Length: 158
Image 1 (cartoon, rainbow, N blue to C red):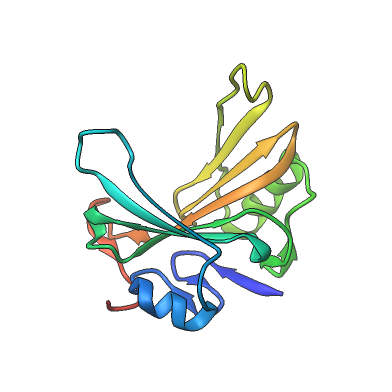
Image 2: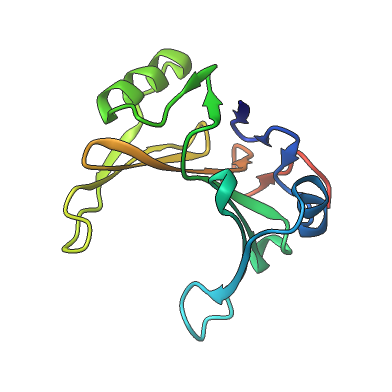
């Protein structure tokens, strides 16, 4: 089981790595997407998909295309020595509070397409925990920031 390392990365993959370095660790991705977050803004990103591994890696132009987000979409990964997929929102919330001493912020993102879609946000971990029908469905993990909340802390140099 690969460990999620808050603010650092996942296993040997570290935030701040270049795309070629991630590919050298994991091999060729099964899909690569490149798009703008909002059309016409110039806010481009590239996403490497490793679907069999339940992972995507996102590289943004704002970050000079260094690895900024790792999305975990299924089992095989641990946080605080525990496998979280399959756990309910309340249990994940308690686990986070136990290990960090902080309460994560809960937001309701429900829509017509996703009628029971919630996000537990923990800035200190740099992780957004997404829940569908009260069950963890995805974790978006990111680098952390200095105390000014603007300067990124890059564990790996590109």
